[in-house]
Length: 274
Image 1 (cartoon, rainbow, N blue to C red):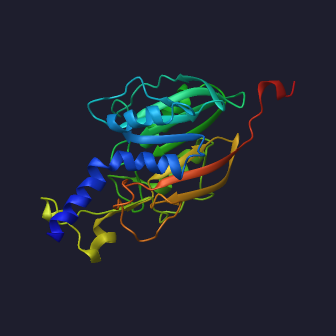
Image 2: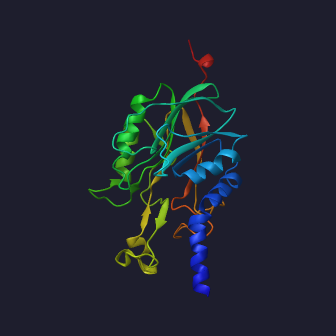
Image 3: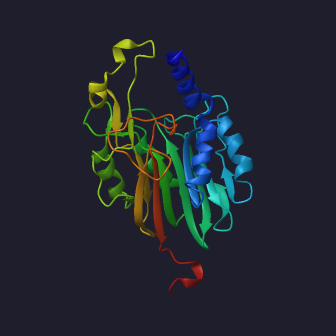
């Protein structure tokens, strides 16, 4: 009947068709992206990305890529713009295999470090990861796309988003937003009654209270760049619908897409003043 058909559609959209839909969004809405930082990527998505981007981008995987966990941080880097890509060895400081990928590269002839990271659910590994990347990164600029797992509400067990802002600014970095706003959410999901832990399920009137509605995602960069504009997207159409729970049947991720246009200010070595 109708209910069984609906359950089947939900299951297909969020499971069997999830990765093909992610690829479809990337190849259509974000086809012009020069750098794509992905987190929690599994084997099926990687297998789909490889042939689809073979002619335009380099697919970069960490040496610690975990086939078993299927939660890897990876990158797509436009060929011709980004060259000489080499992984930067950053010793793990509590995070799991595949959670962090950092590479050195040249962008328009200038040395840049690029990083992609997904840490623990409570965000307590985000600051250590940021510090370790900066400690081991070669000299030059930095662009860091991350699921920081930061939270709107203050708690001793989670990483507050304003504490994160203080951390990255103390390290000389900027975020894609001019100022961090605790209520600028990039996640909004809640448990339904279609799962066994009914005590954690949220009624339609309890979504904000019981759901994961937080400002978790960031693009950080060093002083060699400036942000021209930043957009959130929870539809796959470059639109962000406030107060809408996601994933949806059309948008398979529980994190919004965060896209940033950066202006490159670093000069090539030949342009440096003597």
